[in-house]
Image 1: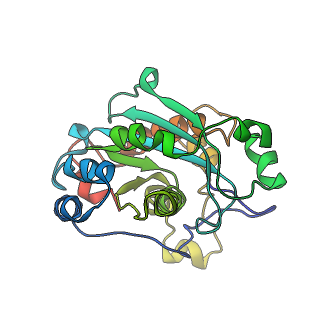
Image 2: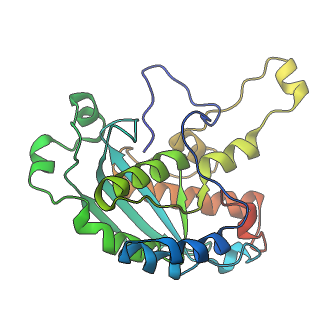
Length: 248
């Protein structure tokens, strides 16, 4: 989940840092399936994706959240993974997963305070390699859902570069980006000094009257994100919205 500096209020998506986005993901997957050297990546891309024109109500999805050693994907690593399969109509919490993994980067004390995963927790946990196969199997053929896509996409990309020698590309339906579009102020609202609402996950959930969950646990945050997306789709979009209008 995204970490904020003390006192920082998140009102706009952060456009700094790496991001990977294409116009039409399914054809890219076909090309990447032929180029990938790793068997697990070839199988992931070969599973394909629904066409961009597919109504969101027909798209299988997977809410994903990582807790990490910090904000820098190139210098840091993943310490836990939360996965929640979903559709627009249902959340399959019974089939969800939560894994703690041992990072290949220093685990600073301030990140321990945030997510509560201690040095002894990670010392007794396996490397991410142990979970790459089941992780990619769950992601295969599904649209990934996350709150602030750069964290999950960049951390997984760099973690796989480190372990497999090649990274990964995949689209994400970003609930933060959707909320930014939904709550964007008009010129006149800005002129009158109105401030944009917070885009933090908990604050966004309040606007849809969703319950409060304690943050910074990968499974809980993935579930929170899944519920938020459902509320956004029902309130502002609709079942016929093409998935290509939502993923980045």
